[in-house]
Structures are given as structure tokens and as C-alpha cells.
Length: 270
Image 1 (cartoon, rainbow, N blue to C red):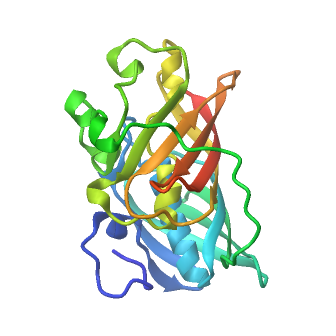
Image 2: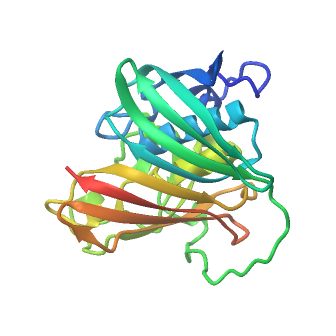
């Protein structure tokens, strides 16, 4: 399946699995697949976001995505679903729309996203990318026992070292820097950047016992620019856990050292 803006049927798994087909009146047919499942055996939240954002973008015929905020309302399952979209406002600089994902009578997720042109404007970058070794000098977690099925088989990861939680020795520091890209180095578009903001194991796992499983409640992604070809340097961190809920911040940088996306999510410990 692919959306109507992409021409002939694609053979790319990412294109197929995040695609949707217009039905009319702002409704699109979606098929959620288990090829992006997490270890909890549910479709990954970043994959859900990318699918909804692509569908809303195609339906509105808007400019590039700039910000997307999604709330997850029910646990998703692989299978047919329906994306219901609406345009909220079409301004000259910002166009905003909403999309809701339904599986039968179950409301799975709700998205609000804004789109706009990318004119040149004032820029001040006060941050810096993670100080990572080159990807070819980093560890491939698939070679250290990480399962290659579902999500972890669709994203390539490279880490300076194997995380402590992975070896049963959590470090106590809920942060991690790593390289990511779509499997095989597939070109990154804006929905894929949104996916990569929520595509690796949560750093809260480094806090050890009682912090082994987490699920996203709400996720807001800022999409700044498309990356240059190559790997995406990723910084993930959690600094606050309150009554079983925690935040997770993410920064994505391209190989030229430019910030391409950032996000914050609220997640619940299971």
C-alpha cells in the first residue's frame, strides 16, 4: 500500500507500511503491520506517528511538516485501520490539520500537525551534536543478541558501547547517544524523522528494577530540516520520573552536525 502522492506502487518496506489510500471526504485506509512491532508485540509509536503524518500531509496537500503532536489513546494492533483527517486552518505561513486513527470502534491515536514553507530566516544554534565515534567503529546491537524481528530489524543502530541494561547491569544514568538510520540507509523524509524520535529502547531502562517497560502517552516532535544522506546522531535522555510517569527528550543530528529534529514525550511505566 502507498499513498496517492507517490506514483507507482513502491517496493520499499517503509513506503508500503506507512502508506495509506484515500477513500474520500478526508478518510484514508491504512494497514498497520507487525513489521514495526516493539518487544511488547505492539506497533511502535513512532511508526504510528509516521503513518498518520504522511496520510494527513497527503490529504491536505500542505507544505513540509514542521511540528506534530500525537496522543496515544488505545493499544494498537496490526491490521486494517482508518485515518480520519480534517484541515483546521490554512494560513500563508502555517497550515494545521488533525488526524484520528481508528480500528473498528477503537480510537487508537489523535494527531495535530502543522505544515509550512521553509524560507531562509534567522538561525542561532546553541547546542551541539553527540560526540560519537564513526558508525563503523561502534557496536551493532544485532551482533550482541538484540532480536532482529519487528522494529529492531527495520532500523540500523550503532552504539559506542552496549547499554548496561542490555547486559543486566543498568548504569543508573537514563541517557544514551547512538547512531540510527532506516535499514539499508534508505533516504530519510520528514515522517521518518518523526519515527526516529521514538525508535530505540527508552533510556529509563538504565534505572534498573521497576523501570523495565515503558509506553508512550503523548509525543511532540519538531521537524527542523531534512538531513544530509547518512546516519542520524541521536541523543536520548530522561531526567524526571514522577508517580510512574517520565519524560523522554530526543535530539536528532545529521552527519553535517545540523539539528534536524527534536522531541519530548510523556511515557508511563508498566
